[in-house]
Length: 164
Image (cartoon, rainbow, N blue to C red; front, side, top):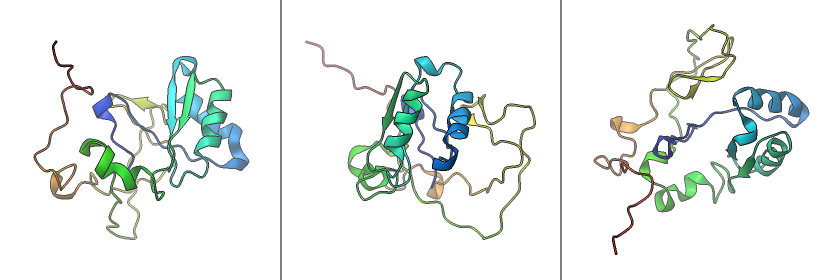
């Protein structure tokens, strides 16, 4: 599943795998990706809302200003994907990636020592030794949402207030 595109709210998303047996390593990896966790608010979204509350509490206890668990997860029955058509703008919709082949494509990964930190475009850099599968941009026909091909995101994340 693709990571939600949060550019409409001037934020970015990253994926970090959580394993209950390696909580300390998980916390170290997440903390390394944020220059100032004490002034950072994070939202945790997992696949089926199994660990999101636990992870949010763990991150808060380890120095983040605020941490929220997104109820329902990404693919749960009441999760992001289930409610996106009714409640979320098309620019943040997520769709399952189509399997192009069972063969993994190895790509050249940055060796500039960023250790997975976000650089430049706001997208996480894949750590050395990771396997990246090229699945295209995840959008059908080049549109973010095939149901709304001409719809553009608003220029402002909040609507204008009517003048009195």
